[in-house]
Image (cartoon, rainbow, N blue to C red; front, side):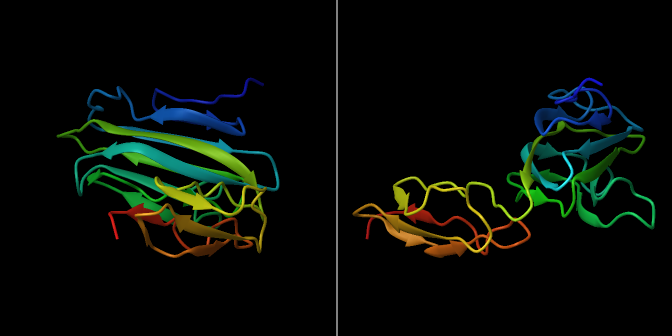
Length: 186
């Protein structure tokens, strides 16, 4: 079976360990009316999925992207992780608890916008993704980011830490806090 890594049509099965971009129909042009698109992301067993958005703009309150934690949207096998509509300049990464994620995009019969573009990456449960290094900042650890590991951030001379200096990788594959920034002159 071919591993599909990206999608530019209306839904599909995405089975590579990481992939994208995945877009709404006709992106970056406007999507159509009465869309009903479904994507199933499946990564290797024992992994979790991280969804990151490059852009998101749908008709607010009418056109929705619903993201489910699990393989479908039926009542015995899902939980809604996020229901997105409208314009979002930035969306916090969405992380599954299992190796499957189900997404459904629906639009109504009038009005449309540019839509969305996202990427996904898998990771082994018990590990966190690289939290990054802020501009004008440093971190003390560049290892494999396993559960329980703490990363300490500092800023270069002349810059002030904005946020928490220490974040810890939690067992569910998320960090205890956001990556801080380093801003302005002191």
